[in-house]
Length: 424
Image 1 (tube, rainbow, N blue to C red):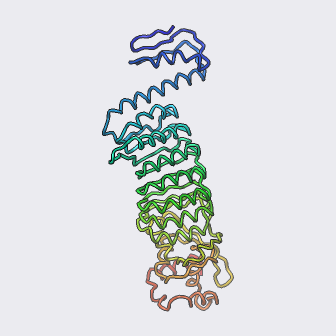
Image 2: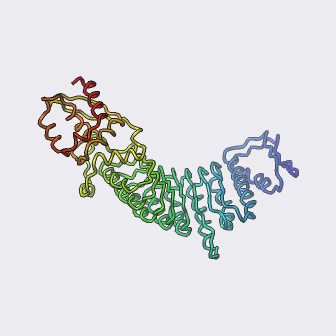
Image 3: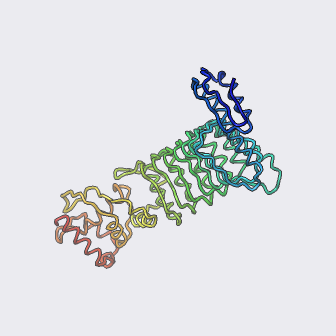
């Protein structure tokens, strides 16, 4: 028999061996029946894993229920943050009645709660019921939902999609690191596309592939106010990424884009260069960990059919994004006097100045990268008088007649310095 009081539950020194959930059940019920419990003492007993889980289950469920019940009578409550509490699907069950009955909530943070498929589905069901039961014309709608790191997976995606469709009011949706795969991503996009005022979408570290990428591309056209798009580490794939990049033309208010680690290849980057001209407010662009390099050979038919961007356009756009200062650009081999291969390095400030003062040149897909193209232009100017190769002469002849006149004193000093470095 347990020792109990108004505020104390104790099994101290009973020598009980509680191994299974059934062993603990009666004591867990006694604890749940307390009205003003303040202290639990379990010392002097052997409690197994399953028994401990049974006790924790009842405690978690009751704790979350008590918390949510206390908020029912708060008609002006607009924001609730329960992140980083490991209450799992049991806690979601305890929240259900509160979420259905509360009509004022606009912001909900449930990040890293271990909800799982069951918990995520319960949260979605609660909001669907809430929407259906609210007959008022001026319905209070959820605007911010954060449910990252919850292992929602594909199993909860259909319910979440129905929830998103029912709401239609979401402005911020963050569901990173949930193990959602292409089929689930496609379902979620279907629901999210009905939320036309979406400003911030974060689905980082889920798996899109081609199917999920195509679904995202279709949804992007619905989000005219989108400012932040985070689909980094989502495996868009080479074929899927180009659909997403092309669709960004609809999102001219974008300020941040994260496309890192998505197996993006150079055909998508060529498309992106063109799209950047439309994104006047873009301040952050993450492309780290993709598959384009000095050896990339773009194959996209759609990219080849578009006007080819110039080196100046690319560099100026990167400068506007404050991205150039993050990198030092290295050229591939440069031929000087038609024979000698020299490895050289041009820092960003040098490259920017060269490109700004040279006339616009046509970008050639047959060159390795923009870096080599710039270096080859510069190499023509570095050759000693009387020893310029035929290739260099042809390169110069393609420039505008006023090119020499456009070179200011800074460029002359720069060229002299580079000659000295190369010992020409």
